Image (tube, helix red, strand yellow):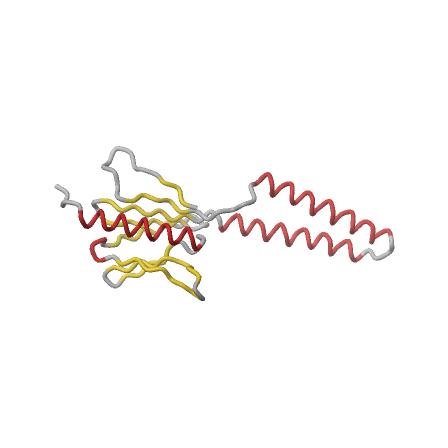
Length: 167
């Protein structure tokens, strides 16, 4: 998912985009789903307990725990942020990992090439190359979103290269 933002107090950038992974299940839906799975697991486990197969109840609890852990890891991975800003100063890519680690990469736009990484005719990520540096962005986006972002980035680079020099 892409979200447009503009910096305040500065000249408009050629491109200013924040990328975040899309999660279709909001926190309220997650709570509802967990209550549904927990309630169903409890009823099934209790029924087996009454029939004398009490170990099955433990497996129902384990199943609930595994689903909960999987969803929590998924939501944690959704905290990844990639911010691309193309301005007179160049292209700056800021990546914030789910752990909160920040990596800032500056690339020279005049020599930048934008390519789409395809696997089995499916777009997987965007590769940015400039002066021997390669950076992969948007691994979490869909193919259509990656293609749209690559087109927008290419258009912004063309505008950057054809603009008069600052100052």
